[in-house]
Image (cartoon, rainbow, N blue to C red; front, side, top):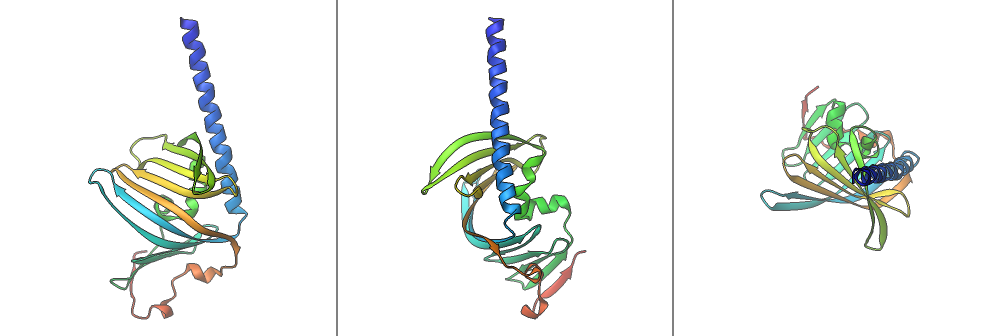
Length: 212
């Protein structure tokens, strides 16, 4: 009986290792695809669900990225980051907050972090193949190795045809589920570095709040 249990344990551990390695290989390919793409643009839909209060809302947005630089446009705000400085323009108040975010802060806001966050601090599990809206995607689950972080689980779907992320679902520790669905992804586009910086001339009425 002990021999059978030991054999089952070895097989289970072996399958976990295969699942983790398969997941890492897929994520490595997706990361390499992004790193080789140059500048990229995409439109997206973000659906947010409060699993405890059973409330939900959604909005559409656009993102431009080049390396660690990004610009995110959503209905009520625009965020620019040029690799060092971040500007957040709130449309209702016409206020711009300027800061130099830390690495931890960037993990919560930078789209490009998704392409490298899996490399440390997470257990990876390959969940299999799914067919969604005519696309064949690989589903991978990331769970933090340490408890007490900002989120409890990340699930990503990667399109097999182009190694691109098509959906990212993040469940945070408070029970909030954010589902980001990526649409109209374009790579190799020409984007000037100035796109990732706030231009005062375009927002002459904006109040500047420097938090640096």
